[in-house]
Image (cartoon, rainbow, N blue to C red; front, side, top):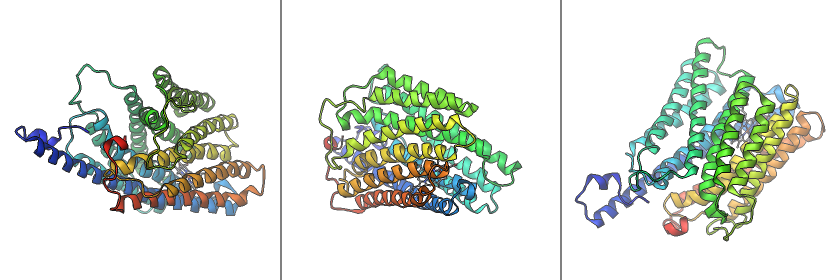
Length: 448
Ligand code: HEM
C-alpha cells in the first residue's frame, strides 16, 4: 500500500495518525469502487452474457444448425462477456491494484467513477442496440465513444508517475505484458468505434459482417484479454503457486509471437496466425513455469485447495484452443464448430477459469480484507465450469461438424452446466461482499 495518499499529500503538516486515518479512508473508498466494478461485471456476465448465450445455444440445438440464431444476438452475447464482464473486472482490478503495485502517486477518485459510468453505459447501450435494433444508429456510435472514453481515463490514471521509487529503477517486465494488452484493448475499442460509426452511416443493421467480426474477435481475445492474463499471471502466480522465478526473455518472446499472430489474423492469414498463437501461449506457459513443480508450497489460505490444479488446467485449455484454431484454419469454410469450440476453449476454459480461480483469490482481499464466503462454492463453480467446457467443446465439434448426430442432444446440457458454474461464482462473490462477518478478516501479509 502506498504510505501517502492524495489527501495526505495535500496536507503536508499532517501527523502520522492523521495520515493513517486519511489512508485508511481512501482504502475503504477504493474497495467500495472495486465492489461496484465487480458487481457490474457480474450483472453483465449473468444477464446479457450468459442467459443470452444459453438461449442462443438452446435455439441452435433445437434447429440442429449453427446459423439459425440472429448474428446480432450472438455478437451482443460476445460483447457482454468480453467487455461487460471481463473488461469491467480488469478496469476495477486495474484501478485498485496497478497504482499500488507500481507505487504510483495516488490519482483522484473521480477517474474510476467516471470510467465506471461511461463503461457500463457504453456496454449496456451496445447490448441493447444489438438485441433490439430499435433506433440503433446514434446509440451504436455513442456506445463505442463511451467505451473508448472510459478506457482513456483509465489508462491516463494508471500510467502516471511513480512516487516512491528511484526514477531510474527499471519497470518489472509484467508491466510490459500488461501494456501490450492495453494496446490490444485500445486497438479493439478503436476498431469498434470506427466500425460503429461506419455502420451508423452506411449499414442496414448494427451487426458486423461475419468475417470482419471473426478477425476483431481475435484481437479482443488474443490481443487484449490474453496478454492481460499473462501479465497478472507473471506477477501473481509465482507467489500464489510458489513457482520458481519466471523466464523473462521467454515472456517477452511470447508477447512478440502472440502480437504477430494477432496481426496475421487481422490480415486474414489464419493458418500463419494460429500457429504463432500456439507458439505464443506455449512460450508464455514455459516462461511462467506454470506446468513445473513449485519451489514453495502454494498459498491456498482462504481458497479451495484445488486452486493450483485449476490454474494449470486453464493453461491447458488455452493450448487446446490454439491447437483447435490451427485445425479450423485448415478448412476455413467448413469449420464453424471447430472455430466455436476453439473460441470457447479460450473464453470459458482459459479466461473464465482464470477469473474464477484468481478472482476468488484476490477480490475478497481487495474489497476490504475479507475472506471468500465459501471455498466449497468455489470448488463447485470450478468443477461445473470444467465439465461444462469439456461437454461444450466436444459436442460443438461433433454436432456442428456433422460427425455425431446424438451430440446435438448434449449441447444444451453443456450450456446449463456452464450457466450453473457462472451463477455459483457470482453468488459466492456477492455473498463475500455482503457478509459482514469476515470483513477485515485478513491481514495484508496473508492477502499477499
Ligand atoms: C453459459 C455459458 C455460455 C454459453 C451457453 C455460450 C454460448 C454461445 C453461443 C451459442 C455462441 C454462438 C457461436 C457458437 O455457436 O459457438 C457464442 C459465441 C460467443 N461467446 Fe459464448 N457462451 C457462453 C459463455 C461465454 C463466455 C464466458 C464468454 C467470454 C468470456 C463467451 C464469449 C463468446 C464470444 C466472444 C462469442 C462470439 C461472438 C461473435 O461471434 O461475435 N461466451 N457463445
